[in-house]
Amino acid sequence: MRMIVELKAAKTLAGEHVAQLLGYQWVSRMEHGVLINFGAPTFQIHKFALSRSERE
Image 1 (cartoon, rainbow, N blue to C red):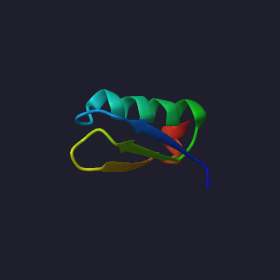
Image 2: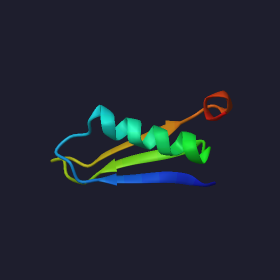
Image 3: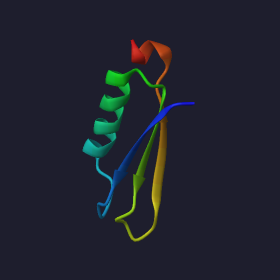
Image 4: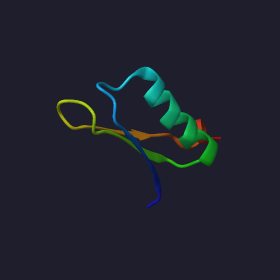
C-alpha cells in the first residue's frame, strides 16, 4: 500500500496542516495519508482516507 506521510514539528496541528495533506492526496490521487506531529507535548498522529470519488 502506498500512502503520503506528512511530518510536522508544531505545537499543535492546525487546519492548514490537514488541508496541505489532503491537497497532496488529491493531487497524487493516493487514497491514504498520515499526518504526524512531533512538536506537541504528546505525539499526535491522524490518518486520512479519500474515497475514489474524492480523488477524481
